[in-house]
Image 1: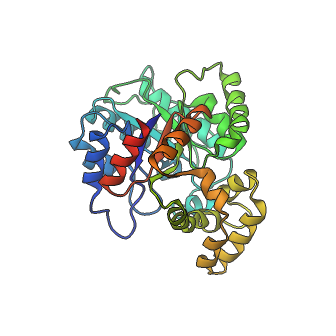
Image 2 (image 1 turned 60 degrees about the vertical axis):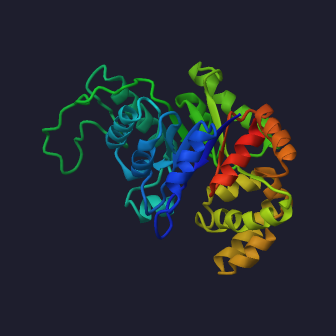
Length: 342
């Protein structure tokens, strides 16, 4: 099982110990380090800054939001970081949600699947650099010929030759159609919440995409976000995780369109999801966290003794996960997780 360190996105200020965490991840054998973005810090810059002191670990975005950049701009970021890292960059993409896309980026959220397909196709064209990049649209037309155009746009190839035409593109996906699209057009699936119990369902979704494209699972990665904590007090640790789960269920989406909440509903926690959402949206966040079922937290995390963690990692691997992306916040935790994974 590969391990990835999730640095996440920043709060009010940058994390003070991020360089130590990145160095520890490389020292203790982690495969990758990831950065994320929401509506504050971006995901590319921290990887370029902190990753400059690394030699081996892959540097990935988990995830960059498609509406934040045009496909061509995103490709420029990706090919630049891939060169600077010596071919260690992984581009993780996600559509985000309507509140962020329309409220922060001022872009329409409709038709996320079609937008994703066009976006990835343009990225592939840029990385291949076989011909000037064109796209008929309708979401990302190149050259642009819509309202306000003066008709002088021309198809272009990137000036800089990409280091790798096959730079890996992973998609953050949660629903069945998104996951199927991921296995059809991408190189990996970033699963923000994954339950090994439902691996059969996930495999059906993935197989649908593989069948459409004729692609194989052989080189496809399934990277699941999973809090892995080595401890003799799992009850206390799981209680500490509940507020974060409640935030994603109740606060990271709109009523009637919360993709994270839908994930947990598919897991069989629909009644709890409704209760958490109502409490969270009414400002009763502490109560919302208390309503999060213990078994839900246990399904999406690995918490316990080193022996328990080792056994659970094996179970997740058998369920199809190739990488666990963990959110360790100190060097000791990184070391403990790495040792348990050996």
